Image (cartoon, rainbow, N blue to C red; front, side, top):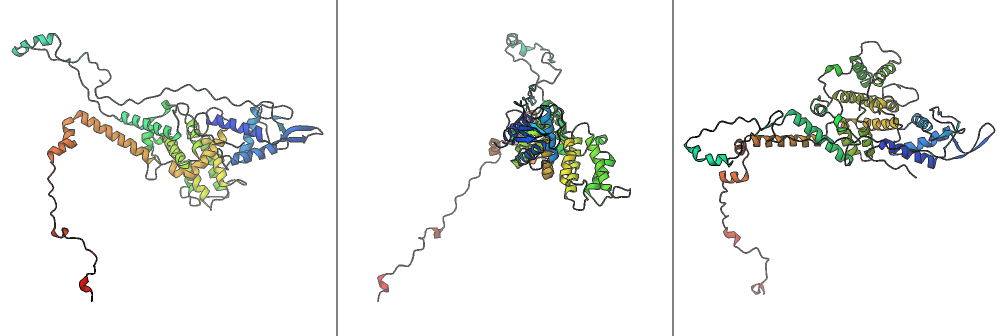
Length: 467
């Protein structure tokens, strides 16, 4: 029984939990152990459980080889709390599991987690403006009409007017494509593109559409620097200057031009701790609480790297601009530190890359409600972000081109509806072009005399050549 791949879709975290629990109960080796002069059948030590589960998680494509032994111990603590395992005396419910020789066993039954029941979100269908729809606050009842003057011509039409043969007057409004319409087009097409990549029939159970802000999407696409980093209009939401200086110091180590204070032994560790403390005390993770299920669902596409990158690109467009900017600067610093061979070790006994993942994973992705696998899922996501951050934090060019063409088409339609005569002059139809530019008669090419000649034939011997 192998760890199957759990693809994108709703309740992916719950599915992964149940899958891991089933594998652990079915495959974990059990044997006889002695403790305090007493023998216990069908049990295992805590260290044996850590060894076996750690290897299972590392070999699983749902979690990857970046899973650490510490994370495995944290997961076993949650197993003990949720009664997936119990100690040899039947105690459970607390997270006091440690990597030692203490004995544990499986209870007779280990209930799986039920799928949460979320309220169905109403689908927000974007309705584009109709050219004949009256603007809000207007009606067809109070239309100003000039009074009819009975002259000699109207006297003969009085019967037709009385019986209603004259068509009723109707006010036609010409509406324009507003900025709000353009933003709603961006939102609608972006979500449709994400749904298509994930292969889902609906985004209802993965993403609450009403929390998606169309202004964020447009800002993240167009308000960027030459390096592709988001530029904020509200400078109060920027990173504090001291945090930005510390991040630049570690990203450009050992060339720290922004810091004026003298460096000392262990200076880089203190700077790193300052950055970690700031990000660790954020009220909400950078990927936000309401986008947690969407990002976890995308993790099911990691076996198809190109599709996963495209899906992450779109999900990151939905972030508030200040979150996207902080994420861009943080990922750039993390990658530069990992690639810097001159950087001293920031933590004894722990690799730089592993340290980055463990330090910043929860401030990047975290669930508002308790999710037992959120630490492993966050580590998996951060690892993929570090490997592909330059592509993921770019604007998807195919999506941008498609939406801009859609907006341009709607504006042409708007111009055509409002000014049909001008449109016909500027953009003639094939019929009008044929009238303006009649097709000229093409003379047939002259028949050349050499074309009538027979083609070259090979030399044939005749009798005149005989002796």
